[in-house]
Length: 185
Ligand code: ATP
Ligand code: MG
Image (cartoon, rainbow, N blue to C red):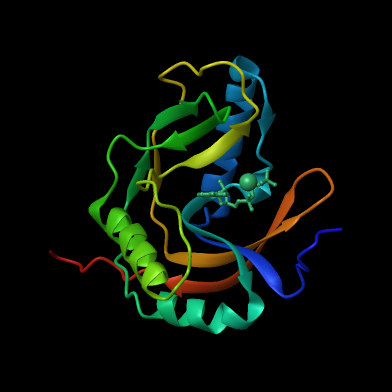
């Protein structure tokens, strides 16, 4: 038992959540990569892109997070997943992009800024958009193993991470729309 009671704390993060079609394509890529790199594929239902990681937050502060997210008015974008990355030290293989859309970077930066201003602790490192595909991967992927996938997220979400027996379960708590790109511009 922990000396500090975890009662009332929730492990939270903001994320982009793939739709079923993109999820299936990413899961297929993970399966292929696993044969080359080893490790464990992230379960299909868990595939996501973290925008801001909060860690443990008292449940009583959820309304503050909701207000921050609701106040963002973020623009939608097209994210082209066309790159496989490998973080050797973390043994992670991930899907990312050669070019982060401006509006995705702006969303992550705005979220981090408002969270920090609101007294929440967030990741200090620069935002690197990625969807983790493999954990505990011991070998580097071939550079060209991801067929380009276009992602047009309609919303971003607040997620609660709940440890499970051999994995982790994610529960989407709330969703906020990304504003559609203006037609004709
Ligand atoms: P597990 O930790 O059980 O193996 P997980 O890493 O998927 O599973 P969490 O640790 O709850 O689950 O993390 C949720 C999301 O936040 C993941 O995308 C994870 O990569 C990211 N994340 C976790 N810790 C940090 C951190 N310190 N900084 C930035 N992102 C983080
Ligand atoms: Mg983790």
